[in-house]
Image (spheres, rainbow, N blue to C red):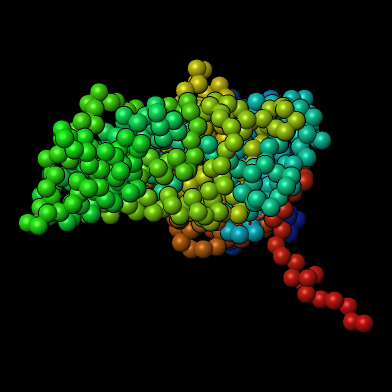
Length: 590
Ligand SMILES: Nc1ncnc2c1ncn2[C@@H]1O[C@H](COP(=O)(O)OP(=O)(O)O)[C@@H](O)[C@H]1O
Ligand SMILES: [Mg+2]
């Protein structure tokens, strides 16, 4: 017996200690059982003051199994003892470890030698979040978490597919030699660094992107810009084909744009200039400034028909109108590309130009400005360094592309697919993570057998990508929020790693079922975690400030109670160590 209960305040039991405290190591954080008739309640000592232990009630043993939550408080006569060694794992870890179902990731800092683990499904079948200040142990923790699964003796997670968006290129070292350790498993790496020769450069086939992806890529701000992108995608199919096959469609678009101008009511000089400008940029072999227009008795070039007469009028207005009308073709139907032919940024640019033309952009300044900005951005992308990530030299279907992502250089299935996005700016990195997440989500959604191939998407520095940004306005959804809400049922699961949880999208955090929280200092982040995370107690919040690197508090559906974990060291470790200033500064004196 530790002592006698002298008070119960809400969920805290006050116990007058009857032992000599000097004979014990610290009792704080230890668990106690309270035998109360046929009940066996469990609590945790959170404080000791003036010989009184403050014990938080946590749960009870029912049929020799720990159940979280207390319905009835103990009576004052309950016998309070420190918990027995055998019962500890039942509360803070897995009591009956099964190789295929459970995994150990560390040790208890409170009970030395007690391994801490969880049921794999309870953790990995849900979204999870790992938070902590810089240097608190997040990256090492992620590496350990995954290595623990890969290092099992009797079984291998051959069908795991874990996509890591590696903001600093840290994880390569932790996983590159995985097949040396476990021959059945393989690692696949993509990089945004074009100067590394031994790693495949990340390449995104443009033809697999949807209107939404292109809108993000071109940084569209308003839903009113989507129709022009949609139109461009419909037209892109025309431009990758030979002109002879699509000349009717092109002529139709050019003729319609010119007819719009002819009937715009503008003065003759404006009309002439605009038609000149259109035909200089857009023309076909049948319809250009030199095209001959035949009339009974005479022939004139289109250019000559634009001459303004002495009275300031376009004399051949009617002739031009009739000529243009002869190109109209109402039977043309355009459809969205279905990913069945390849195209690149240049093709898209031409299609966007024609889309602008066909949407009458020349007639309205506002529409023109709003859409022209897309054209300018596409131009910038084409002329910038990032264009190379869209340069693909052969056609693949979406399914083939995803199969290739999942295939290691040795031809076997890769379990870890690492994208090193360290070499692009945050905006572009965000687009990359969104494009891939959407691609994987759409693929998983269409799998015949739902959730039969789980995809885990791990986002380092998630606060840079998973934000409350304009996507909901623009597209009606944010892909990360969609995955956090719907991904579970299709087996698409997010792991959000962040030092700035308060910058993360709230919807996404609130859908996470498990949390590993390393040391956190910033009051704003601590407050945010307190507000956002379900079931977090003041006790946990207090401890967050004083955790050592590699120690975290884990809670959520995979843990019976919030648990302190000293994570095992990853082996090999990610290359995330901080800069060795003294080692780099000093040299020995001669
Ligand atoms: N489980 C651990 N055991 C021992 N040391 C650790 C552990 N986790 C982290 N560390 C130490 O903390 C440093 C920072 O860890 P890291 O995971 O890179 O932090 P973060 O990703 O949160 O910035 C590591 O270089 C290592 O020295
Ligand atoms: Mg890190």
